[in-house]
Image 1 (cartoon, rainbow, N blue to C red):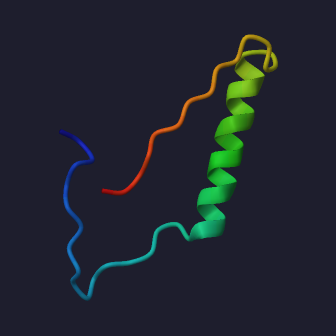
Image 2: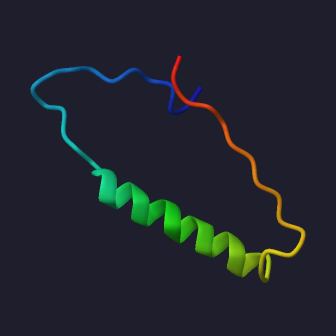
Amino acid sequence: MPGSETMSSSSQDRLVMDAGDIARAVTRIAHEILERNKGVKDARTWARPFGS
């Protein structure tokens, strides 16, 4: 399954996105959803728990 690879902890690991980058990306995705749906009327929200 794509994206299911495990991360290694080698010396070549690098940070791709920090917390601020992720927050900006999530905000932009939310704005894109609002634009495509022409607002929040009839919008539904859901959450997926993280962790084990």
